[in-house]
Length: 324
Image 1 (cartoon, one colour):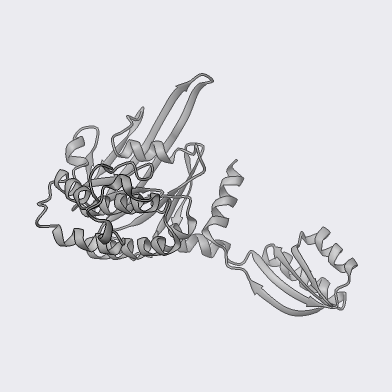
Image 2 (tube, rainbow, N blue to C red):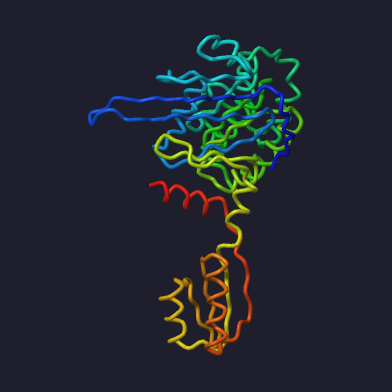
C-alpha cells in the first residue's frame, strides 16, 4: 500500500463538492449522484467502490468532464473544470471501460508514444520510461505487433502501460485487473506502488477486485444509490471489523449442544471430526463471552479459538447491504 504524507495546507489533487446528476428514463427521473463531496490529496491512491448503479461511473465521468453535472463543482489541482477544462485536465489521464482506450491498429510501442505525445511529452524524453513499462508488463516481445492481434489480457496491459506512459499527475483506472492473470495482477500492484512513490502520482481506482484495492489503496470511498456511505482509510475500516468473526474448535460437544449454539448464536460452517467440532461465530465481544460461559457450563472443552481477519470485500458487502 502506498504511504503518503498529509500536508494540511496543500491544494487537493481532486476536490468534489455537492455534485448532483439526474437522468431521464422511461420510468422517470433517475438520480445518478446525489450530493457527492470529497477531496483527494496529492500522492494518494483511493478506491472508488460501489455496486452496479451506485453512481461511481457517473462521478468519475463528471470529474473527467465527460458528463456535465446538474450542479456542484469539481476542481483538479485547484482549477475548476467547468471554468477552465483544458487547464484542469491537462495532466489527467484515464483508462475507462477496460481496454478500449488504445488504438488496436497500432503496436504497443506506438500506443505508448502516441499517448505520451498527446499529453505534451517529448517521445525521446520518455523513451526509457516506455521501455521500462513494456518490460514491466511483459510486453517487450509483443511491442511491435498490432494490438488487435494480442490476447485480452495483453490488451489490458497495453491500456495500463499507455495510461502510465505520459507525464501526468492524476490517473483514473477503471477495472485495471480485468483479464489479467494472478501474476500480472500482482505486477500491477507493485508497479502502481512504485510509480506513486517515485512520481507522486494520484490514482483513483474503480474495481470489483477487492484484493487489489486492499493492497494498493490508502483509502476507500464506497457509494450506493448515488451517495457516499463510507469514506475512510483502509486500515481504519479493517480495524473496525477485525474482532467480529471467530473460528473455534471444541471437544465433547454432542449434537444437542451444537444445535443449541446454532439456534442461540447463529454459528456456521459446522464440521465434526470424531469428538471435535469446528465452527464459526460472528458476534460482538459480549456475545462471544456468553458463548464461552455456555460451553464451560455444558462441559465442553475449548481446544482453540482464532480471530478471523476480515477482508475488504466482507466490509464492502456488509455496508452496501445495510444501505440497501
